[in-house]
Amino acid sequence: MASQQEILEENRKVRRLQFVVNLVLNVVAQSDLPIEEASALVANTRKFALDLFPDKEFAYDLIYQPKFKRLMAEKYRIV
Image (cartoon, rainbow, N blue to C red; front, side, top):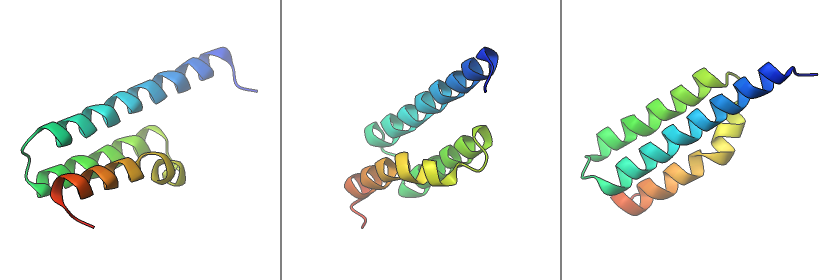
């Protein structure tokens, strides 16, 4: 069973990841970044998430990747 400290640390990391994901989504949506820079931000966000939560690629791909794909498709008209 996880200790209270471990639970608090996990919650802190989740909030940090949510903050970064929302920040990147907003920056990409509201700026005039070239597609290459936006793609780099998205890739770096994935790396950040996997640094916080190693071996959770499936969860990231299930939860966050669709948001980024949808935004990139809408903003840059890519499929």
